[in-house]
Length: 488
Image 1 (cartoon, rainbow, N blue to C red):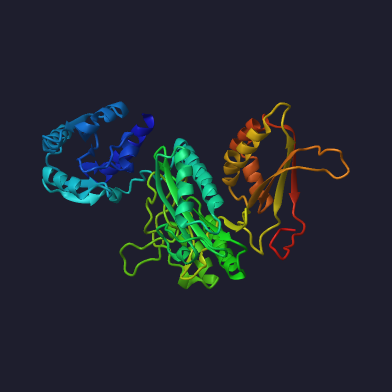
Image 2: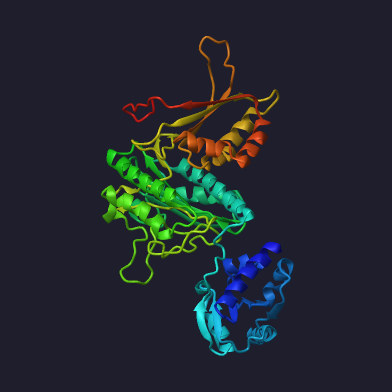
């Protein structure tokens, strides 16, 4: 409750600063953020009313019992037979708002909610809630960050299911269903979208997954997202069926560089426009500026569109516009999703920066964050056994699913592999049965991740499952590429 009170106080401070008498929020993510609950957003009037000193909720009787279980705010209920007018008037009377001068309305509120409210308050000057410049939902609490991380890990697992389903002969719809099924079985509240675009369809930003059959040589864009405990995930990856062409890798390298520059520019005090420019100029410098249409700004001063895509929080596309020209400074703990890419009207599709997964037969390997000018790479190798009596099959299932998803979420990770050791030369049996390798772009990135207190705490728990672990940190001296693309 203390967190909800803090959020409500933040809104009330904004009301006072801007001399707004009343704020009205419909059954949206903002309502849940402020009140701890939100009704199903149907046609029945449901509105949270907030003044500088008080608050009340107008709610259909149909949903009143649920509200009572989640909030201590006063409820003004109405039935389908009576209509909402009397309940709305009673709530406004309690708040002293039968006539107001300025009304702030949630931008996601239905028009047939806002119009009766405006009539009931004397047709006041009406402005969007965002005009109060209150950073609701922008800076995340530790609990919210943890919820977002859980949602992201769930999306990683669903993405792996989709990648595993990609092979010549299956349809886009079948790959999309693999992701949706994984989300559902993993406890998602809602599957928001499962976009799978293959071959020529991969060039369409929001393609509707269809019956096109995947073919060898296809680039397959997979863009999926769901809601877990009311926090949204959104992840895009590119799978290539077969070895990518030189041109495809060139596009991928350009997008990867743009992504890296954008991430490097993110810091408290930087403007959103500066972050956007850092990434956008990298695409232009590589010669692909004309193909970069993802959230390209429209002509004129209205709705300058953002190339950095959008925020990542309760709403799947929160705060997505205006970044390119926005002068506001980034706060200390926003979570933003750098969803950068560009599209060509051909079979190249979009080379997403975070993972390029060439797929041949049943083998999927992940290439990411690599460039010819990168610093010396660092490899962490962990060799280990299991304690006597441990279940090998259960461990392998955990290691290749839940724990692999945790590994893939490591900041700056290039690639991670898991091995079962079969033989040891000149030894009767190998001294270790299992090996994990993880690659990082430089020692600084590795140390920042590995020695972070939260990771060390989790590592201590994982070590309880292992026997005789050995950790080796090695620095790359030389690397070479052979003809079929394997690292040497």
